[in-house]
Image (cartoon, rainbow, N blue to C red; front, side, top):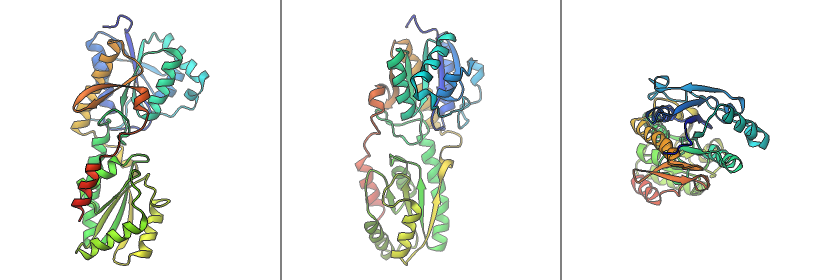
Length: 328
């Protein structure tokens, strides 16, 4: 056990994700287990600059494992992007006698944390919390499983209407740079087509595929579109193009938006968050810093921030093949 670590701070940053509260709970209780003090930082990296700290103990985090969002709140911070802002954050941490920091967030959070560690040599361990599942080096991020379940449930309900009225629904899901949600939810909900940033299907090929589906006897169709897909400028333009080139369907658009981020976390996300929270404290006590704790092949792994922020893991080509085969 590192003799230097006596007091740990924890924060959540970037977009909220179901399971963040379970991770906070795990960090606080793991700290207590190891007889360490734990401090919550409110409103993410901005809270570091403003010194918005609160002492946390095991009872402070009761009844939050089932709650969505983050009890520590989250906020973007332009000030933290400046050297002067990071200096204020460092001074606040030292004034509060905080020895190490656990950050729960995504790519932007880890990028800022790496810069902070490089400048001040301050121990930081990250926990991947983002519904997009777009962090390199971990099989899953906190919130991803819950978001998938939310999307599949929504698509199931939309399909009832699509079948009743012989309609084609374009359903936009989150995924600016990664198509994991669209691909997995599309397969799980039985979508006819799935459009993701990693593959450029093209408008004409999409229309041809939809015509083929109609001729095969399908009376309705569901097309899942990741928000970062570049087949059109946006999903509305894509819908207009389909209407102009495909008379067989009445075309409707549904944008699921931020409902994908909310809600009570799934059991998987609660367990994952708990494992990563404990793993983050363990890593700090082992003298590790400038890393993310993730999960690979069901085992906790440690990944340098420099590797984690390189981008998402490559899309699973086998899943794309499964989607193509099962949508005929």
